[in-house]
Amino acid sequence: NNWHKEKTGTHENGKPLPVSGEKVNKYYEFRRKTADEEAEKRKQEVYELVPRMKEIDDEMNICRMSASKAIISDRVDKKDEIKRLQEKHDRLNREKAVLLTENNVEINHLDVHYKCDICKDTGVTDEGQRCECFKIITKGAELRQKNMK
Image 1 (cartoon, rainbow, N blue to C red):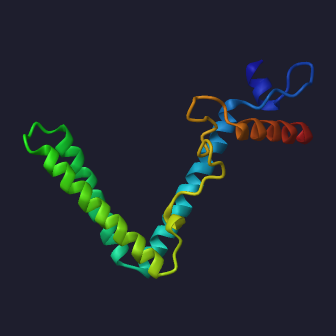
Image 2: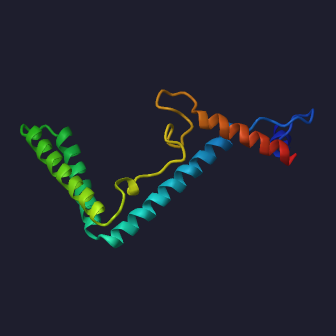
């Protein structure tokens, strides 16, 4: 019976079932994956345009990893090391901003651009509430499902 309901998308009385949260979550997953892939593509284009950008990103990653190791270490001088790494990271970040500006690339060009800035395409706000876009997507999916019947 459940299989029949799922396969037909209707109750026994013929009324459509509500859109499952799983389907909406898969849609959000698709949106996030697409946004991530587009950001990666933009990043690769910038790397081709300005090869130094990749070097900077690699150095910044090393700084972040080294800072993480320093934080969890029991070394006496870890505060100095963390401060030095933060200063280096900040310097690299400024260099990155200058390179982007010099090459007419917007500062946020490399960011992931989500369709919903509130929930970042998760359907849930930072406060743990359903985002407004979730309600809109669910309602739209239910209308499409109804029209398909």
